[in-house]
Amino acid sequence: MRVCLVYDCLYPWTVGGAERWLRALAEELARAGHEVTYLTRRQWEEGDEPQIPGVRIVVVSRREELYGPDGNRTIGEPLRFGRGVLRHLLRHRRDYDVVHASAAPFFGVLGAGVALTGSGTTLCVDWFEVWSRDYWRRYLGGLRGVVGWAIQRLCARLPQHAFVYSELHRRRLLEEGLRGRATTLTGLYDGPVEPHATQPDPRPLVLFAGRHIPEKRVPAIPPAIAAARLRVPELHALVLGDGPERGDLLAAIDAAGVGDAVEAPGFVATQDVTAAMGRATCLLFPSTREGYGLVVIEAAANGTPSIVVRGEDNAAVELITEGVNGFIAASDAPEDLADAIVRAVEGGAALRARTADWFAREAPRLTIGASARTVLEVYEQVARR
Image (cartoon, rainbow, N blue to C red):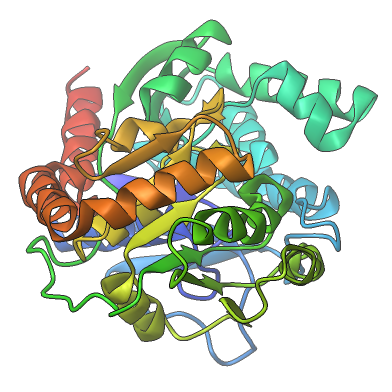
């Protein structure tokens, strides 16, 4: 089968859950003997082009930054990428049996949808998130937010086979008027499926790992640590990552008076993140918006429970079984987060054992390999139809 993958990011030049997934899918398809093309933007220096066995990389737009100073996606880059996708597929639309695109950026999907009209080629779309109209307005502001929501709605109504990664976003996609079928994929984890042997820190340790952007609510961590230390004086925290809200995080550490208890070293090597997960008492992940919540699974692989926050845009709560592999805080208020942290500390070794057992049971369905096999089955069904 001839498959074209469409995404403006390619792992490891750009790092993230969607990047890992599309790269892994490309490799899985190639190993299965399919003819694979990957349309993307340039992310590497001249002469350092990616070499992925069995995968043809086609650059359709120039190298440029994805995010502006505010941490939001820029507008120009996805427009240029969408134009490049449109041009390529207009020339080659009958050269592929399936075109599989990431919903974000939307202009790549629009370009593919327009180019494939009447071609007989099937369009598949990965919907990691479907934002509400209200969230679009909060994210981009009044008119721009409404335009963003309208473009998302238009993409949902293109003829397609959709892949979703949570019940939250499956429901929203159907409400947006999806034209086609939707298949839920349960796995984006690409690590070992056996729980890791870990040695927790002697003092209770709270860990955060991720980008410091508004929706992650990283500045909520220091006041939560201060509140929790009233009951667990030896508690300390490690906040990994960087981003536009790093200054707010450092200010929050000073304001909460926890400079001696909260360390924020910035970005660290992947192996250091993994080691920290193994040492942590819990992962604190107060994000307001998640399409999946991969870090919850990565923490559980180390026997480390997670704390997430209930919210209308947070699909990570679907990965938590309360008291088994973590806790769901009612809000990001210091008292609510502190209550969950104290519960994780009090859970001790028994909670870690339950978390490791949860991972051992669930890991087979949570892997990238499991999702790739489901996608291949869908491709085969499409080919038969």
